[in-house]
Amino acid sequence: MLYLKPLLLLGALFATLVACKPEVPLCENDEQCQTAVSPANVCVNGSCQECLEDYHCVANRGDGHSCYAGRCELNTKSERLRRCKTSLDCHDGQGCFNGLCTTPIVCSFDSQCGPGAGCFNRRCKKCSPEVLAARKVCEAQTSMVNFDFNQDDLSIETRQVLSNAAQCLKLRPRLNLIIEGHCDERGTQEYNLALGERRAQAVRSYLSNLGVDPTRMATRTFGANQPKCEQSTEACYATNRRVEVSKIPKN
Image (cartoon, rainbow, N blue to C red; front, side):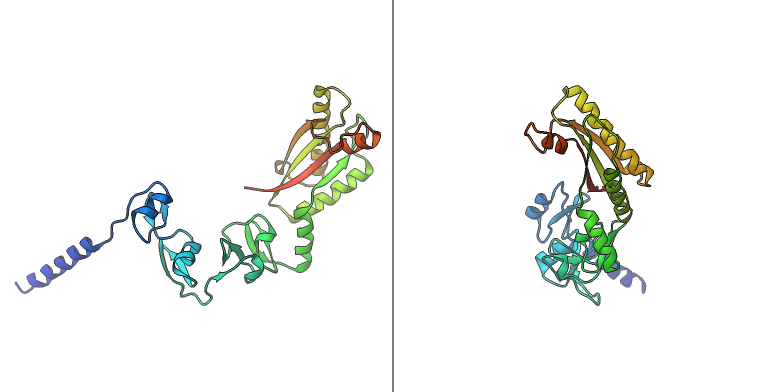
């Protein structure tokens, strides 16, 4: 009998806690959560939660709040989250995402990271100003090389341009290449498409011989369908006989 009363009290307390536990609405999208219950904002794994990312909390609760297990709580870390407009407003190694300075989950370009940091293996890390400067040139660069009439072999000037591009790509292992072959307007559609493909493949093979991973490079041909110059002159023909190498981030 002495033990019965405490057990009854514990049972009543448990029942009260269960009864008071808030029901989490089920959902298929964020809109259902925003109309179902407050302060739920996002649909996470089929149930409404207050947040998924820190910026949800900053937007709804104010600075200094972070997302923990779907709930917004005051950030007790030594350095609170900061609002930002660009990554220049953030500390080293951080990026500006949705108006909030955070260490990004993923990045593709150095420009997404803060001052003194670059994107390495999809993470922002500190690096020297010299490395950042070289990577910045590489990130923005689109290489173009030209060919002689009816030719797909690489000139000395073309090989030098591609050698520089290969060195650049070694600094940016997270960039893939799209190599596009083009021709001037002379010749049939079928012939020009085939010639454009041979030119693109010649560039791909040369870069591969210089150490660029072939799996990073894709080729395509436009033949004479995308001229840079539309006059029927030798100067225009020379401009249109080209291969363009564009860089895109890996997924």
